Image 1 (cartoon, helix red, strand yellow):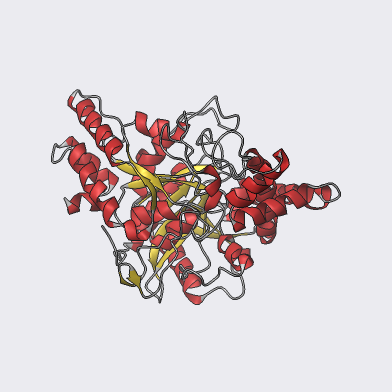
Image 2 (cartoon, rainbow, N blue to C red):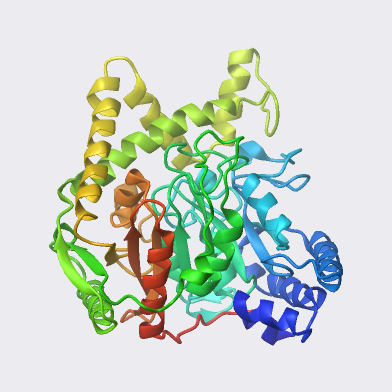
Length: 493
């Protein structure tokens, strides 16, 4: 059964259709794989009984000729998506015991199309982090960590906030996983663990039932082992949702059909401002290699300018905490989750929020509350909104001369747990290449492109025009095939 966990989604769908194995057999193999990777701390809640029940129902639908686009595929769900009757914590102490009475739209779409839930995976608390080291449930360890299982010589971060999703997929415990991306939380962990992760255009996937961090930035997307798998999963996740006012009412393309491999004549934008002084040589080299691969496939590299991108991180770390400060005000100990009693209602609020939120979440709430306060709103928050608009205009201008943009995904390979823990600014800098596209609401994808001198994965990022995920995926598959990365993590199920 071990071989079943090493299949791609596309291969698994093919095997299921040919009756080479059943959804139950495929799910049983993945349930065992989830148990095997427990040392990584990737899962918060395992749901083996529910998974096997869903698999039996899947086999029954297939037998009746009613197979959906993801029929029988076992996946992991980031513990930010509400799942009816299943613990949903956002990796925070303040949501201990919360079992929603409803299902998020994205997961509802996946179950409608036949996907199977293996469990809820770990993340940075409320998606706030770049290393998956802020979770109340403990750090997630990358399967790329060297050494013996449980006694690693160096514990590597899987990236964040979707680190549990990335680790589960990279370790072959799930065929795919849902992630969310606010400033790079799908793309950066995908790069760190050698998998594919795509953040679709803002509004492409419903945010209803996804625990909110920053409402104008949050967007759900798939994390898979291949670009083709990302196309399969993205199609099922997308769709208009009248319950979400930011959901866009437009047809969902057949993303898989867009993977023609033909990129002849496409113009690939190379932003000159991203060639920053001090960029590690191997990051610059893999970027240059990506440009060469696309040239060989018939695309034309063109230099573009994104002059306001240098302000993106500062803008993001005003806008996102401001929205978080507002969104997280709802966690007060009254309706659900943790409650720490006090002498008065005010004491109860303070005790609950003080005990329930971790250090990084408290830091961002304080920053957000400060920039929204009287006397600072115009100086910080409104100014950040204006700069955000300028950043979007830069992309609009750039896309007049190119069809897709190529950049590195992250400024380095994955680092070890603890290396940047005492310096939040260094941690925030991990998002330097991903944040601009989030502020502009653009689709972005990370594709495995090679390994660094330390043997850890390197990724390249592709950015596209709004709602042009098809071009991003098509170009991404060209890079994937040219790179032909065969390196796998030392620890796999």
